[in-house]
Image 1: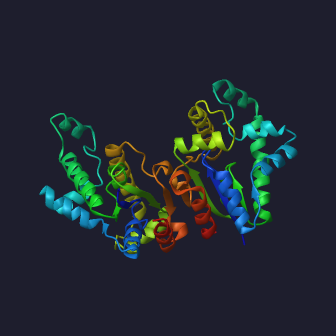
Image 2: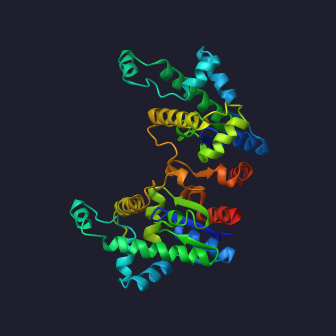
Length: 191
Length: 191
Protein backbone atom coordinates (compact mmCIF):
# COMPACT_ATOMS: atom_id res chain seq x y z
CA UNK A 1 0.00 0.00 0.00
CA UNK A 2 1.60 3.27 -1.10
CA UNK A 3 1.79 6.21 1.27
CA UNK A 4 -0.46 9.18 0.65
CA UNK A 5 1.69 12.22 -0.17
CA UNK A 6 0.78 15.80 -1.05
CA UNK A 7 3.15 17.42 -3.54
CA UNK A 8 2.99 21.18 -3.97
CA UNK A 9 4.51 22.97 -6.94
CA UNK A 10 4.22 26.73 -6.81
CA UNK A 11 5.01 30.00 -8.42
CA UNK A 12 7.48 32.10 -6.47
CA UNK A 13 5.65 34.27 -3.92
CA UNK A 14 2.31 32.50 -4.31
CA UNK A 15 2.39 31.18 -0.75
CA UNK A 16 2.77 27.53 -1.78
CA UNK A 17 5.29 26.85 0.94
CA UNK A 18 3.11 28.48 3.61
CA UNK A 19 0.14 26.49 2.38
CA UNK A 20 2.14 23.25 2.48
CA UNK A 21 3.28 23.89 6.03
CA UNK A 22 -0.22 24.72 7.26
CA UNK A 23 -1.76 21.68 5.58
CA UNK A 24 0.90 19.42 7.10
CA UNK A 25 0.39 21.00 10.51
CA UNK A 26 -3.37 20.51 10.40
CA UNK A 27 -3.02 16.92 9.21
CA UNK A 28 -0.26 16.14 11.69
CA UNK A 29 2.20 14.94 9.04
CA UNK A 30 5.69 16.24 8.17
CA UNK A 31 6.33 18.91 5.54
CA UNK A 32 9.61 18.83 3.62
CA UNK A 33 11.01 21.95 1.98
CA UNK A 34 14.09 23.74 3.31
CA UNK A 35 14.59 20.68 5.52
CA UNK A 36 14.76 18.65 2.34
CA UNK A 37 17.30 20.99 0.82
CA UNK A 38 19.39 20.62 3.93
CA UNK A 39 19.26 16.84 3.69
CA UNK A 40 20.26 16.92 0.06
CA UNK A 41 23.13 19.22 0.89
CA UNK A 42 24.35 16.95 3.66
CA UNK A 43 24.30 13.85 1.51
CA UNK A 44 25.84 15.47 -1.52
CA UNK A 45 28.63 17.25 0.28
CA UNK A 46 27.65 20.40 -1.58
CA UNK A 47 27.10 23.74 0.11
CA UNK A 48 23.43 24.28 1.12
CA UNK A 49 23.22 27.54 -0.83
CA UNK A 50 24.46 25.85 -3.98
CA UNK A 51 21.87 23.09 -3.55
CA UNK A 52 19.09 25.61 -3.15
CA UNK A 53 20.10 27.45 -6.29
CA UNK A 54 20.65 24.31 -8.32
CA UNK A 55 17.02 23.44 -7.58
CA UNK A 56 15.93 26.38 -9.67
CA UNK A 57 18.31 26.32 -12.58
CA UNK A 58 18.02 24.07 -15.56
CA UNK A 59 21.47 22.59 -15.91
CA UNK A 60 23.74 24.17 -18.43
CA UNK A 61 21.76 27.33 -18.75
CA UNK A 62 23.08 28.00 -22.21
CA UNK A 63 24.92 26.28 -25.00
CA UNK A 64 28.29 26.85 -23.39
CA UNK A 65 27.33 24.48 -20.61
CA UNK A 66 25.55 21.98 -22.76
CA UNK A 67 28.85 21.14 -24.33
CA UNK A 68 30.34 20.40 -20.90
CA UNK A 69 27.69 17.69 -20.59
CA UNK A 70 29.28 15.75 -23.40
CA UNK A 71 32.01 14.96 -20.88
CA UNK A 72 29.54 13.40 -18.41
CA UNK A 73 26.87 14.42 -15.90
CA UNK A 74 26.99 17.93 -14.48
CA UNK A 75 26.87 18.85 -10.79
CA UNK A 76 23.18 19.55 -11.26
CA UNK A 77 22.65 16.05 -12.64
CA UNK A 78 24.39 14.61 -9.62
CA UNK A 79 22.18 16.65 -7.29
CA UNK A 80 19.10 15.57 -9.21
CA UNK A 81 19.98 11.97 -8.58
CA UNK A 82 20.45 12.47 -4.84
CA UNK A 83 17.28 14.54 -4.66
CA UNK A 84 15.46 11.76 -6.49
CA UNK A 85 16.64 9.20 -3.95
CA UNK A 86 15.87 11.34 -0.90
CA UNK A 87 12.36 12.25 -2.03
CA UNK A 88 11.62 8.63 -2.86
CA UNK A 89 12.86 7.55 0.54
CA UNK A 90 10.90 10.21 2.47
CA UNK A 91 7.70 9.29 0.65
CA UNK A 92 8.36 5.66 1.47
CA UNK A 93 8.63 6.41 5.19
CA UNK A 94 5.08 7.73 5.59
CA UNK A 95 2.49 10.32 4.60
CA UNK A 96 3.92 13.82 4.16
CA UNK A 97 3.77 17.11 2.26
CA UNK A 98 6.63 17.89 -0.14
CA UNK A 99 7.00 21.40 -1.53
CA UNK A 100 8.78 21.93 -4.85
CA UNK A 101 11.71 19.93 -6.22
CA UNK A 102 9.63 18.09 -8.85
CA UNK A 103 8.36 15.69 -6.20
CA UNK A 104 5.17 15.13 -8.22
CA UNK A 105 7.24 13.74 -11.06
CA UNK A 106 9.66 11.79 -8.89
CA UNK A 107 6.84 10.08 -6.99
CA UNK A 108 4.54 9.43 -9.92
CA UNK A 109 4.81 5.66 -9.52
CA UNK A 110 6.00 5.49 -5.93
CA UNK A 111 3.27 7.15 -3.86
CA UNK A 112 -0.44 7.85 -3.84
CA UNK A 113 0.03 11.55 -4.62
CA UNK A 114 -2.32 14.51 -4.45
CA UNK A 115 -0.59 16.77 -6.95
CA UNK A 116 -1.20 20.47 -6.31
CA UNK A 117 -0.03 23.61 -8.11
CA UNK A 118 -0.36 27.03 -6.43
CA UNK A 119 -0.19 30.26 -8.43
CA UNK A 120 -1.32 33.88 -8.15
CA UNK A 121 -1.20 37.05 -10.19
CA UNK A 122 1.97 39.12 -10.21
CA UNK A 123 0.57 41.91 -8.04
CA UNK A 124 -0.37 39.55 -5.20
CA UNK A 125 3.01 37.82 -5.37
CA UNK A 126 5.00 41.05 -5.61
CA UNK A 127 3.34 42.37 -2.47
CA UNK A 128 3.97 39.08 -0.69
CA UNK A 129 7.66 38.75 -1.47
CA UNK A 130 8.26 42.29 -0.22
CA UNK A 131 6.22 41.76 2.97
CA UNK A 132 7.04 38.16 3.81
CA UNK A 133 10.47 37.54 2.41
CA UNK A 134 11.80 41.06 2.97
CA UNK A 135 12.70 41.37 -0.70
CA UNK A 136 13.64 44.81 -2.00
CA UNK A 137 10.58 46.86 -2.84
CA UNK A 138 12.12 47.89 -6.18
CA UNK A 139 10.77 46.07 -9.22
CA UNK A 140 9.78 42.78 -7.54
CA UNK A 141 7.95 41.95 -10.77
CA UNK A 142 11.22 41.45 -12.61
CA UNK A 143 12.38 39.10 -9.89
CA UNK A 144 9.13 37.12 -10.13
CA UNK A 145 9.48 36.71 -13.88
CA UNK A 146 13.06 35.62 -13.42
CA UNK A 147 12.22 33.04 -10.74
CA UNK A 148 9.21 31.67 -12.64
CA UNK A 149 11.29 31.20 -15.76
CA UNK A 150 13.96 29.33 -13.86
CA UNK A 151 11.51 27.02 -12.13
CA UNK A 152 9.70 26.27 -15.36
CA UNK A 153 12.95 25.54 -17.19
CA UNK A 154 14.23 23.33 -14.37
CA UNK A 155 10.99 21.39 -14.23
CA UNK A 156 10.89 21.02 -17.99
CA UNK A 157 14.48 19.87 -18.21
CA UNK A 158 14.20 17.06 -15.70
CA UNK A 159 10.58 15.98 -16.12
CA UNK A 160 9.72 16.92 -19.70
CA UNK A 161 6.39 18.17 -18.30
CA UNK A 162 4.96 21.64 -18.69
CA UNK A 163 5.07 23.48 -15.39
CA UNK A 164 1.72 25.06 -14.53
CA UNK A 165 -0.21 23.03 -17.08
CA UNK A 166 -3.49 22.01 -15.39
CA UNK A 167 -3.37 18.50 -16.84
CA UNK A 168 -0.29 17.65 -14.77
CA UNK A 169 -2.06 18.14 -11.45
CA UNK A 170 -5.07 16.93 -9.47
CA UNK A 171 -5.86 20.52 -8.67
CA UNK A 172 -4.41 23.97 -9.18
CA UNK A 173 -5.39 26.87 -6.97
CA UNK A 174 -5.06 30.63 -7.36
CA UNK A 175 -4.01 31.74 -3.87
CA UNK A 176 -4.41 35.37 -4.89
CA UNK A 177 -8.14 35.12 -5.59
CA UNK A 178 -9.03 32.26 -3.22
CA UNK A 179 -6.81 33.24 -0.30
CA UNK A 180 -4.11 31.22 1.45
CA UNK A 181 -6.42 29.84 4.16
CA UNK A 182 -9.06 28.68 1.68
CA UNK A 183 -6.36 26.83 -0.28
CA UNK A 184 -5.22 25.13 2.94
CA UNK A 185 -8.80 24.10 3.69
CA UNK A 186 -9.45 22.63 0.23
CA UNK A 187 -6.24 20.60 0.19
CA UNK A 188 -6.67 19.41 3.75
CA UNK A 189 -10.25 18.29 3.10
CA UNK A 190 -9.22 16.45 -0.06
CA UNK A 191 -6.50 14.47 1.68
CA UNK B 1 -22.11 45.41 -7.74
CA UNK B 2 -21.23 42.74 -10.29
CA UNK B 3 -23.01 39.40 -10.25
CA UNK B 4 -21.16 36.34 -9.05
CA UNK B 5 -20.80 33.90 -11.94
CA UNK B 6 -19.13 30.50 -12.17
CA UNK B 7 -17.54 29.80 -15.55
CA UNK B 8 -16.54 26.25 -16.37
CA UNK B 9 -14.16 25.37 -19.17
CA UNK B 10 -13.65 21.68 -19.66
CA UNK B 11 -12.01 18.95 -21.64
CA UNK B 12 -14.42 16.85 -23.66
CA UNK B 13 -15.72 13.96 -21.55
CA UNK B 14 -14.35 15.28 -18.26
CA UNK B 15 -17.82 15.81 -16.81
CA UNK B 16 -17.54 19.61 -16.74
CA UNK B 17 -21.09 20.05 -17.94
CA UNK B 18 -22.47 17.59 -15.37
CA UNK B 19 -20.48 19.34 -12.66
CA UNK B 20 -21.81 22.74 -13.77
CA UNK B 21 -25.39 21.53 -13.69
CA UNK B 22 -25.05 19.95 -10.25
CA UNK B 23 -23.36 23.04 -8.80
CA UNK B 24 -26.09 25.30 -10.19
CA UNK B 25 -28.78 22.97 -8.87
CA UNK B 26 -27.31 22.93 -5.38
CA UNK B 27 -26.87 26.70 -5.35
CA UNK B 28 -30.29 27.33 -6.83
CA UNK B 29 -28.99 29.40 -9.75
CA UNK B 30 -29.37 28.81 -13.51
CA UNK B 31 -26.84 26.89 -15.60
CA UNK B 32 -26.36 27.86 -19.24
CA UNK B 33 -24.99 25.40 -21.76
CA UNK B 34 -27.14 23.83 -24.46
CA UNK B 35 -29.77 26.43 -23.48
CA UNK B 36 -27.21 29.06 -24.35
CA UNK B 37 -26.50 27.48 -27.71
CA UNK B 38 -30.21 27.56 -28.41
CA UNK B 39 -30.44 31.23 -27.56
CA UNK B 40 -27.48 32.04 -29.78
CA UNK B 41 -29.05 30.08 -32.59
CA UNK B 42 -32.33 31.91 -32.25
CA UNK B 43 -30.75 35.33 -32.32
CA UNK B 44 -28.32 34.58 -35.12
CA UNK B 45 -30.78 32.92 -37.42
CA UNK B 46 -28.29 30.08 -37.83
CA UNK B 47 -29.16 26.45 -37.42
CA UNK B 48 -28.60 25.19 -33.84
CA UNK B 49 -26.29 22.41 -35.03
CA UNK B 50 -24.13 24.89 -36.89
CA UNK B 51 -23.88 27.07 -33.77
CA UNK B 52 -22.84 24.12 -31.68
CA UNK B 53 -20.11 23.17 -34.09
CA UNK B 54 -18.93 26.74 -34.60
CA UNK B 55 -18.30 26.89 -30.85
CA UNK B 56 -15.58 24.33 -31.23
CA UNK B 57 -13.86 25.35 -34.42
CA UNK B 58 -11.32 28.10 -34.71
CA UNK B 59 -12.51 30.12 -37.70
CA UNK B 60 -10.79 29.45 -40.94
CA UNK B 61 -9.31 26.18 -39.94
CA UNK B 62 -6.56 26.45 -42.50
CA UNK B 63 -4.96 28.99 -44.79
CA UNK B 64 -7.62 28.59 -47.43
CA UNK B 65 -10.12 30.09 -45.07
CA UNK B 66 -7.85 32.72 -43.62
CA UNK B 67 -7.82 34.39 -46.97
CA UNK B 68 -11.63 34.60 -46.97
CA UNK B 69 -11.30 36.77 -43.90
CA UNK B 70 -9.61 39.51 -45.90
CA UNK B 71 -13.07 40.13 -47.36
CA UNK B 72 -14.61 40.74 -43.92
CA UNK B 73 -15.76 38.84 -40.85
CA UNK B 74 -16.62 35.16 -41.22
CA UNK B 75 -19.81 33.47 -40.04
CA UNK B 76 -17.87 32.34 -36.99
CA UNK B 77 -16.90 35.93 -36.20
CA UNK B 78 -20.54 36.92 -36.43
CA UNK B 79 -21.52 34.12 -34.07
CA UNK B 80 -18.75 35.08 -31.68
CA UNK B 81 -20.18 38.60 -31.49
CA UNK B 82 -23.69 37.36 -30.71
CA UNK B 83 -22.35 34.86 -28.21
CA UNK B 84 -20.38 37.67 -26.59
CA UNK B 85 -23.52 39.78 -26.23
CA UNK B 86 -25.70 36.96 -24.92
CA UNK B 87 -23.19 35.79 -22.31
CA UNK B 88 -22.66 39.38 -21.16
CA UNK B 89 -26.41 39.87 -20.86
CA UNK B 90 -27.02 36.60 -18.98
CA UNK B 91 -24.27 37.42 -16.49
CA UNK B 92 -25.79 40.87 -16.04
CA UNK B 93 -29.17 39.38 -15.15
CA UNK B 94 -27.99 37.52 -12.06
CA UNK B 95 -25.73 34.83 -10.60
CA UNK B 96 -25.37 31.76 -12.80
CA UNK B 97 -23.11 28.95 -14.02
CA UNK B 98 -21.92 29.14 -17.63
CA UNK B 99 -20.27 26.09 -19.21
CA UNK B 100 -17.85 26.56 -22.09
CA UNK B 101 -18.03 29.19 -24.82
CA UNK B 102 -15.09 31.23 -23.49
CA UNK B 103 -17.35 32.79 -20.86
CA UNK B 104 -14.37 33.30 -18.55
CA UNK B 105 -12.77 35.55 -21.13
CA UNK B 106 -15.97 37.33 -22.16
CA UNK B 107 -16.87 38.17 -18.56
CA UNK B 108 -13.40 39.08 -17.33
CA UNK B 109 -14.44 42.70 -16.66
CA UNK B 110 -18.18 42.23 -16.45
CA UNK B 111 -18.78 39.82 -13.59
CA UNK B 112 -17.26 38.59 -10.37
CA UNK B 113 -16.19 35.25 -11.83
CA UNK B 114 -15.04 32.03 -10.26
CA UNK B 115 -13.11 30.61 -13.21
CA UNK B 116 -12.91 26.82 -13.22
CA UNK B 117 -11.27 24.33 -15.58
CA UNK B 118 -12.16 20.63 -15.44
CA UNK B 119 -9.96 17.95 -16.97
CA UNK B 120 -9.26 14.24 -16.63
CA UNK B 121 -6.99 11.62 -18.11
CA UNK B 122 -7.88 10.09 -21.45
CA UNK B 123 -8.92 6.73 -19.99
CA UNK B 124 -11.50 8.27 -17.65
CA UNK B 125 -12.89 10.47 -20.42
CA UNK B 126 -12.96 7.70 -23.00
CA UNK B 127 -15.02 5.52 -20.66
CA UNK B 128 -17.35 8.41 -19.91
CA UNK B 129 -18.09 9.40 -23.48
CA UNK B 130 -18.96 5.83 -24.34
CA UNK B 131 -21.17 5.36 -21.25
CA UNK B 132 -22.78 8.78 -20.92
CA UNK B 133 -22.89 10.17 -24.43
CA UNK B 134 -23.40 6.87 -26.16
CA UNK B 135 -20.37 7.48 -28.37
CA UNK B 136 -19.06 4.58 -30.41
CA UNK B 137 -16.84 2.34 -28.35
CA UNK B 138 -14.24 2.22 -31.14
CA UNK B 139 -11.21 4.44 -30.60
CA UNK B 140 -12.82 7.12 -28.41
CA UNK B 141 -9.27 8.34 -27.70
CA UNK B 142 -8.93 9.70 -31.22
CA UNK B 143 -12.20 11.55 -30.81
CA UNK B 144 -11.00 13.05 -27.50
CA UNK B 145 -7.78 14.29 -29.05
CA UNK B 146 -9.72 15.78 -31.92
CA UNK B 147 -12.22 17.57 -29.66
CA UNK B 148 -9.52 18.87 -27.30
CA UNK B 149 -7.53 20.26 -30.19
CA UNK B 150 -10.57 22.07 -31.56
CA UNK B 151 -11.53 23.58 -28.23
CA UNK B 152 -7.98 24.72 -27.55
CA UNK B 153 -7.69 26.29 -31.00
CA UNK B 154 -11.06 28.01 -30.69
CA UNK B 155 -10.22 29.40 -27.28
CA UNK B 156 -6.81 30.53 -28.42
CA UNK B 157 -8.15 32.21 -31.54
CA UNK B 158 -10.74 34.35 -29.79
CA UNK B 159 -9.12 34.97 -26.42
CA UNK B 160 -5.39 34.71 -27.09
CA UNK B 161 -5.21 32.71 -23.85
CA UNK B 162 -3.82 29.23 -23.42
CA UNK B 163 -6.59 26.75 -22.76
CA UNK B 164 -5.86 24.58 -19.74
CA UNK B 165 -3.08 26.79 -18.44
CA UNK B 166 -3.53 26.94 -14.65
CA UNK B 167 -2.77 30.65 -14.49
CA UNK B 168 -5.95 31.48 -16.40
CA UNK B 169 -8.23 30.03 -13.73
CA UNK B 170 -9.06 30.35 -10.05
CA UNK B 171 -8.97 26.61 -9.81
CA UNK B 172 -8.55 23.59 -12.04
CA UNK B 173 -9.77 20.16 -11.00
CA UNK B 174 -9.01 16.67 -12.23
CA UNK B 175 -12.43 15.02 -12.21
CA UNK B 176 -10.82 11.66 -12.97
CA UNK B 177 -8.78 11.52 -9.76
CA UNK B 178 -11.01 13.65 -7.51
CA UNK B 179 -14.39 12.39 -8.72
CA UNK B 180 -17.31 14.36 -10.13
CA UNK B 181 -19.09 14.79 -6.77
CA UNK B 182 -15.98 16.07 -4.99
CA UNK B 183 -15.51 18.65 -7.75
CA UNK B 184 -19.12 19.77 -7.29
CA UNK B 185 -18.59 20.10 -3.55
CA UNK B 186 -15.39 22.16 -3.86
CA UNK B 187 -16.87 24.59 -6.37
CA UNK B 188 -20.14 24.94 -4.46
CA UNK B 189 -18.32 25.63 -1.18
CA UNK B 190 -16.09 28.23 -2.83
CA UNK B 191 -19.00 30.17 -4.30
